[in-house]
Image (tube, rainbow, N blue to C red; front, side, top):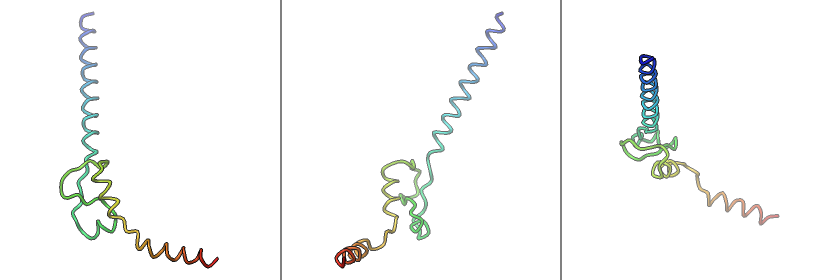
Length: 88
């Protein structure tokens, strides 16, 4: 009877250790390597925040990603739309 209890305690301890190790490993994998500041990464719209590890869901990474998006000349496009509407 005593050996069964000891085996159960050891089994539960192993399960807890494996679970905590998996949780720690998954939480560490959310860190991404920020790409170098190159024209290729700028064209893809990836965050350019230096060569340090940063979480992918931080405000800095999101702002850098949004700043990397090329939307062209929005004012020119809106002027063309306004002109088309004015012609109606």
